[in-house]
Picture 1 (cartoon, rainbow, N blue to C red):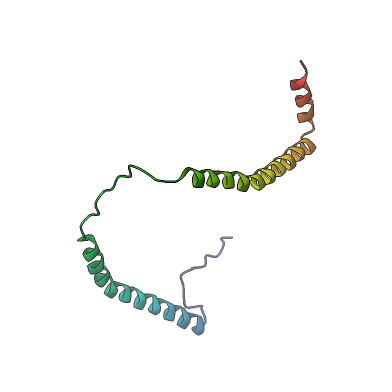
Picture 2: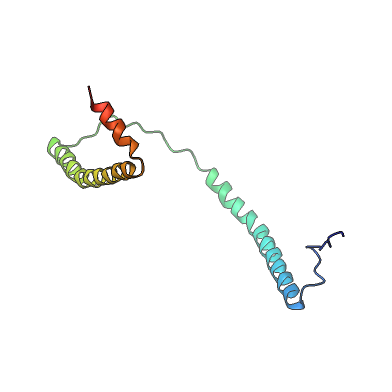
Length: 117
């Protein structure tokens, strides 16, 4: 017995309210497209005006004048700021390593074999 075929595009079976809602959405989409098309030439003029600006002059940095004490303090602060990040990274890697040892116990044997001379 052949199976029945149902058309997914047939709108005759849809209730009237769903058809009205779909038509309203389609109408709003068409209105938005028309409004966007009407606004596009104004945007093109703004872009064209911006593109007519002369190109900025190129610059080359030849020297940076930073006192040594300020530069040294910056790097010392950077080192102290990196310490908590290193502690957190160490903890994450330690937990990851122990999780690997729990789920893959054969890694412990490999570790012992590698360390044995």
